[in-house]
Amino acid sequence: MNNLDYLISELIKEDSKLSNVDIPTSLEEKKELYRALRNIRNPKPISEEYLKVQDEYLQNEIKEKGITDEKDIPFNKDIISIWQGDITTLKCDVIVNACNEYLLGCFVPGHKCIDNAIHSFAGIELREECNAIMKGKTLSNGEVVLTKGYNLPSKYIIQTVGPQVSGTPTKQDIEDLRNCYFNSLELCKEKGLKTIAFPCISTGLYGFPQNEASKIAINTIEKYLKNNKDVFEHIIFNVFKDEDLEIYKKNLN
Image (tube, rainbow, N blue to C red):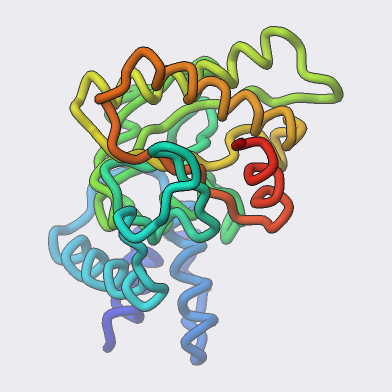
């Protein structure tokens, strides 16, 4: 049995409801199934052998995707960069995850949100740590929590909850989004973390207009740097869509 078959089998064995799940023959289908099984798994202990094999598998998967070191990303303005790519492949001190209020990651199998991607490639240890931190509580909009990066190239992850917007953002929505960025920077300052990458928090499914969200992010960070000049070495705006890339290029001037 190869490593991927072993990992799938171990997760299926944990839950009697999955006993009828067959392991597919194609590699891509196996990878999709394994990600889905990780996504739906509730936080609970598992064997050290599983974790050893999982960690080896995930680190290899990320290497195959291609790791980008923040040192290789050029600055766009001062110490700020715009980088288009997969945040799970970025090597820096800390990446920011736009998570939900429960902090346990996305449970929808194979969902394309950043929360799902980060938990999927960090490994099941991340959900375990988040569960231990939250103990059934929830985070409010703009709050932040620091966790380990586990199998990701980044050392740490800052988990933050952005506002969900329907229509025009309210003053509270704007303040909440600003706090996602400000509180993340403050936490980095407290922990001595020098390089950080932010996704486009609250845009997409959360409904915050992309252009306005970009302006809030840029304004918050530039204002923070004026009073904290030597705290950071590199701040990265991570974008995935071409549209977001153009928006950030336009607004970072």
